[in-house]
Amino acid sequence: MAFAILAQCLNLLLCALLLLKTEGFNVGITYVQNAVAKGAVCLDGSPPAYHWDKGFGAGMNNWLVHIEGGGWCNNVTTCLSRKSTRLGSSKEMVKEIAFSGLLSKYQKFNPDFYNWNRIKVRYCDGASFTGDVEAVDPETNLHFRGARVWLAVIEDLLSKGMRSAENAILSGCSAGGLTSLLHCDNFRALVPIGAKVKCLSDAGYFINTKDVSGTQHIEAFYSEVVATHGSAKNLPSSCTSKMRPGLCFFPQNIVQQIKTPIFLVNAAYDSWQIKNILAPGVADPHGYWHSCKLDIKNCSPTQLSTMQDFRTQFLSALNGLGTSSSRGLFIDSCYAHCQTEMQETWLRDDSPLLARTTIAKAVGDWFYDRSPFQKIDCPYPSNPTCHNLVFDSNEHLPMNRSWVNLITTNSSDYNANDRSCTQHNIHQSSNCTCIRNSSHLFLFLIILRAMF
Image (cartoon, rainbow, N blue to C red; front, side, top):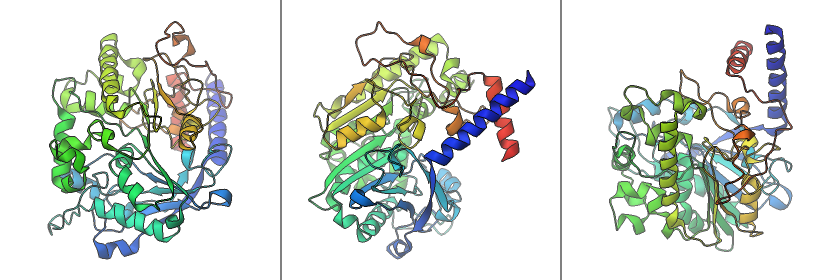
């Protein structure tokens, strides 16, 4: 039995390594050194950075600027804890990162954007590139300069060819997805007038709702982020003129005023929001939600009911988006967070589907005006194509997504009788055998850690 498990694990390892080799590739880092003189720096005062894979062929004048995610810091203490990490210092960033998904250079895996200039902007300010405080406390040496970093990076890209852009997309994941909404119209204004410009937010539609204890935790948190970073002046004035600046960090309060076409990719049961907005540790002191947050299959009927209520509130928060075909929606019923950066969720044989359409095709059709896409999934667990995240119980972080995202919802959960929302083609993976036994997965991870 043990030998059989080992053989299966080694087979999965070989499969995963082959996938990584064929789907991903490393791209070196570029530091914006001249930004330092402008005060456009990370939390620790180091220069901002990005990774750029140059466009080629017909895509040479097309630009996709993707913003990295990584949460926020809401006071001096939490910002100090980020300052000496990659989320607060370019000194701590790796020199190369892997590009895949919407950043892939392979036509097979990214047919609409593979030959574009693809840039991943590193996130090191802690406030979705909105902060701008001139003073620097010598005791902490914290720099709250995200808005300056944003402008310095875009100006650097403009000087390197984006000034001649014919097509451009501002995208981002998580906190970067929020950035792509907050800066969408500003990006449009900086890119040449004749260019076709749109914005894509992946897992960036954070909603203002109460946690399981009845407290408006995320609202208070965002207000602290805005106050700490001096962000108010860099948030959309169409919002700040009507409500408190902290509320203008929520996409539901700004999307209606965004003039540039936008596309939202989001899980209705976004794993980050379930863990940090609906059931943060402070609202669950006895850990009742701990196991559920690690794996949605562990959730009790009562917890699933609470999560269904969260989904209802999430969909309600989308109402301000409007029905214009310039607004795209891909809202699936997965327990996931950030689905455009990973190849297995962006475009592969077993990728998540809505109306038998992958995220890659939906976004491409929307950008090139081939067809509009505004689809909302049925409630969990209706979608058998989901790649639901499973988190490590010790670190509360996703286990290596390249392997764990092979775990899918069992197709027997599919409710073919629900005709009120988008239906799916029941689709099985043709790439690798899925890891479905948790003990096998645990052994597999032990082997990986021993080998690497």
